Amino acid sequence: MQYPGKITSVEQLEDLLSTPTPAAIDAMRRIKGDILILGIAGKMGPTLGRMVVRASDQANVKRRVIGVSRFSNPADGSRLNEHGIETIKADLLDPDQLKQLPEAPNIIYMAARKFGSTGDEPLTWAMNAVLPGMVAQRYANSRIAAFSTGNVYPLVPVTSGGCAETDPVGPVGEYAMSCLGRERAFEYYSKQHNVPVSIMRLNYACELRYGVLVDMAQKVLTGEPIDLAMGSFNTIWQGDANAMSIASLADAASPAFIINIAGPETLSVRTVCEQFGELFSRKPNFTGAERPDALLSNGHLAHRKYGSPTVPPSVMIPWIAAWLTSGGPTLNKPTHFETRDGKY
Image (cartoon, rainbow, N blue to C red; front, side, top):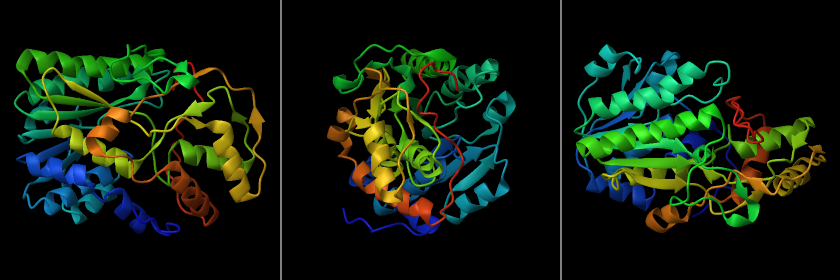
């Protein structure tokens, strides 16, 4: 892939994030019918929706792509409309509103709650564990690709290469437990009603406006202390995460198909921050020391099935540095990558 030297506008960034891979195009060719994206207004949803439209066009498949969200900011819906995505404003937790949504043979489920979970655990469980069961029953005749998280895994040795899909889960904290509840709800209805389901365990999608690399870059820029206890991590370019997630829809099955979406590298927090330090001419302010374990996922199955990530961290890091130093906007949504107790 030919990379631009840097990314200079939100328009250029979102075009890159929504550029489909061959695997995404192939999936859109194999899948028939409309696609309904539930919870489209989050960090990934808008560019994932655009990729679905672009991949369908390149596959010469005509379909409706419909995005559902509460759309607390009406401009979010308008931007999606401009890119060929129909929008519906709805509160998915309201049974009547969920029932009124249109039928669709394909569902991409993105609705979730993470930050703010501590202190309002009931809402977190409702969003992450109750709603999936409601959706699986409402769309029992559809194919479903459901986002989950690598947080369902336990902390593992840094030298392990990360948890694979066949490894036992071990969620730490109520947020992670509620996400495992989401998976179990989809797995249950997949078996009970033969609903084809894919479950994507995502471990740190990143672009230039948010993500674990952006968090580290901002800490280096401001001199904020960088806790080294969670000393290793995975990350993947959001465009690649979009493409792999879309591709997994074609592999939905009963029992549910589970796949990790993560970059191939086990990255060092210290090393990455030092790289940002060189780019910013600033010395990182480290605290603590690296623990021998971390939250890590093994994404090799997705890479074998859908292709290796197209944008590696070695490209993302200078892109992010240039973006931040030029005043590029951020979403102001920290990942809290350093959290080890599962409290978000």
